[in-house]
Length: 129
Image 1 (cartoon, helix red, strand yellow):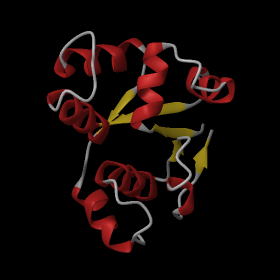
Image 2 (cartoon, rainbow, N blue to C red):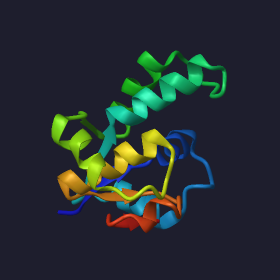
Image 3 (cartoon, rainbow, N blue to C red):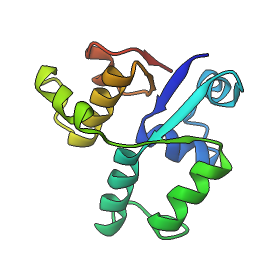
Image 4 (cartoon, helix red, strand yellow):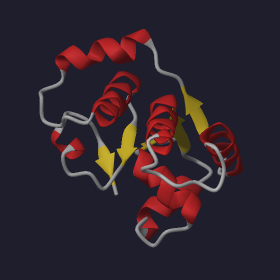
């Protein structure tokens, strides 16, 4: 079984049915042999951007994220102390705090991040797209 962590944009493109999500990424997500996670960090990022009027959603984030995560059979990945403390080991490549925490979670949990973000792929973490 392969274990994947969705980048926030990957999650948003998945639930929107966007063509920005490539076929290979969709196949990883739909494969029942894979375990797919959505981090609470993504829920946090979505909520912050929604609250700042930078991300329109059809529902408020508290309903939208949970419903879409459940509808797409995604497991929720909590943010643990061990994840946060991994931050000290990361080089300063990416300055987006949400993306850095996703990298920390992926490193700590041995997950592959499904992301188009080339900056994330510069970290010592597995990525796929």
